[in-house]
Length: 255
Image 1 (spheres, helix red, strand yellow):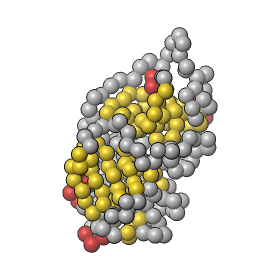
Image 2 (spheres, one colour; image 1 turned 30 degrees about the vertical axis):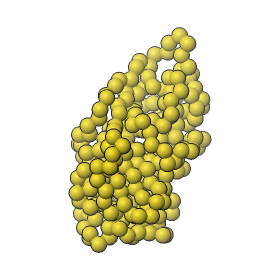
Image 3 (cartoon, helix red, strand yellow; image 1 turned 60 degrees about the vertical axis):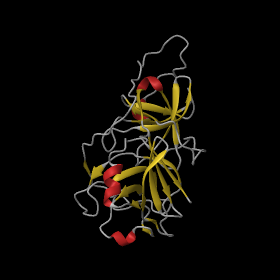
Image 4 (cartoon, helix red, strand yellow; image 1 turned 180 degrees about the vertical axis):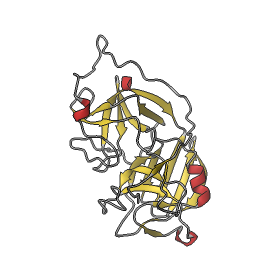
């Protein structure tokens, strides 16, 4: 799990098919919602807990790889043109990218990193820039393995440690939220937080119980269920995973 004090890293992530967001000005026939006081909305970050957010229902489904980055502080709605429920900001552990799970007209539905589990929201495409990642990460809790997939081909597979019975790693669809270094620990040079949280720990080490991928100094843990909910990976796995673009979908199942 993630502690509360972090040192941000500057990490270069290689996207393909980079695109741009449009203007935020309303156009004729646009389904742009009425202006809202964005600053009054709760932040949809890893520390946030949202009310009224739609819940992800396709928890085991890959996406087409589209990810989006807010150009500015941007409202999140419960439906296209619906009620504002939160706001997203351009940075969170550095620049933040959200995976797109649905589109409707000028709107996209994205996975959010806030509680409750599976929170999603709708954001206007004009407030975002977009890109495409050809990666996917799959974590199989039953076999305690992690697969790195690129262009629907398994690049590599590793044994990993997952959460023990009292502090399980949550299954479902999430994403790579960021990358940081924590000077107060020596178990992993880089920590990759995900957009999901422990179902049993409300906080951990000063943080909000965010699940992460990181290494571990004892190789004997790999292939076991011994963590507090995070996914512990071998050093060579972490080295490859730090090259995966932020926003990439992570599918965690019971297989």
